[in-house]
Length: 110
Image 1 (spheres, rainbow, N blue to C red):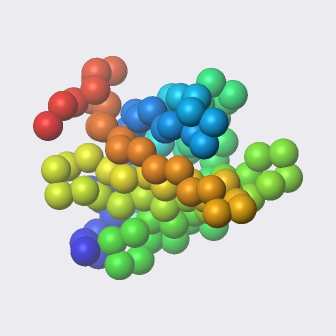
Image 2 (cartoon, one colour):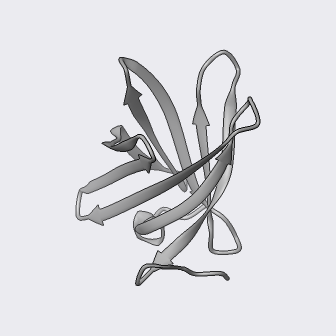
């Protein structure tokens, strides 16, 4: 696992399949600067800055807060250059998706 969060920096697009079978397009923007990592999670409902952002052992962990509920989010780099995004919606419902990097407004297929 990488100890450098810079590989995660950028904007990533993905589509997460929810437990009810519906599809949720999401975007994860990760900004890395010395001593600070900012994560912005976006969907059709809007954008939110993630809370409690921690990068350790190759994993970026944070929380998305929505309607007073806290949802743990984990991001990690995949060997293929994409990212895995997992969101814990509670009650054992963890949804995952693969994020693909966006460059100049276009999704980069590796």
